[in-house]
Image (tube, rainbow, N blue to C red; front, top):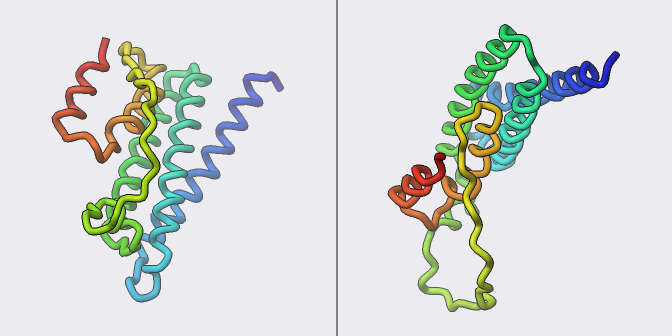
Length: 168
């Protein structure tokens, strides 16, 4: 067995493991009962996000290793199916999430005295520029989402500006 075949096999096994764990969470969502299951939501939501990141990483690696056009098409179909299920599960989990940390994080704390350490000026982070190449899309997407899209300090129009300025 060649090195390429071993890598490919390893990524396929990893993907199967991630998808199995992922669909365990979607099964939880499908069979959700508020009184019985509500306490599990924050943990499952955290795990769902970790699984989604791992799935994206494994899919990207497989996309680079697979040369067969039919296999590439199957990867895209599978990604679409998993992505739909991910959004459905995450939406439901976020809707039912009553974790106090989740609701308190985004609320301003104007009544509490500020005991924060002084802010250190960090160097500006250069946003990635997407070249249009399929192979670089997932890396660009993940970095952009991490730096800009999920930021609570930026307005929607600022996020849009950063997105527009990230294309070559």
